[in-house]
Image (cartoon, rainbow, N blue to C red; front, side, top):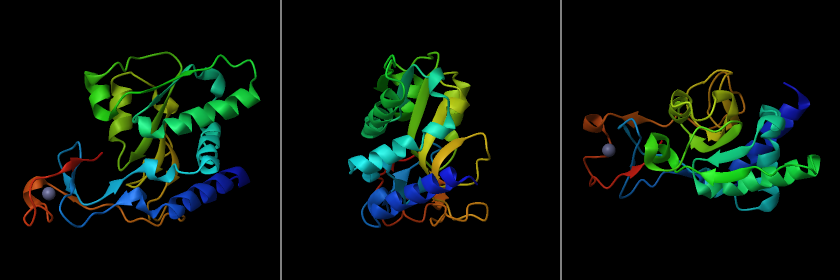
Length: 209
Ligand SMILES: [Zn+2]
């Protein structure tokens, strides 16, 4: 691992530790339904980490090693809650390239946008920022719909099984043998009929990826 990679990794994990509410585990009146239909008691919220400008800039800077800025003409986010990271990236980028033709920043609104619910169209040279994920499902769908190439997609915070080297993850929080800096156990989930959280609760479930 290069010293630059180690520095970004350590900094991103510290940002997560500074904001423990990034993982929502209500344990009370509701739980979540993943797009797959499986139920889970945890929800990863990247926006919770975006409170301080210096940390937002650090997260944005950590995107730089993952792609060539020359190839990017627009930025999509899965939720407008992380648009501050996109704008921070543009600030850094403008400082590096004063003549920059400033890319646009738009949010496509998670799976609804991918599946045609908003104006998320394939465009040359787009960067796609995904706030948080527990699998490669969103990256896969975006790639399959030919909206943004996989190499131009970046997940900010991740908890889940290893996705190999072809998926860009800024901060993998997962406690796994191949991820020694990870501290978060993979979230349990269940088929709806086997959900351990359903019987004592109503069906008041929010969506989760
Ligand atoms: Zn349930």
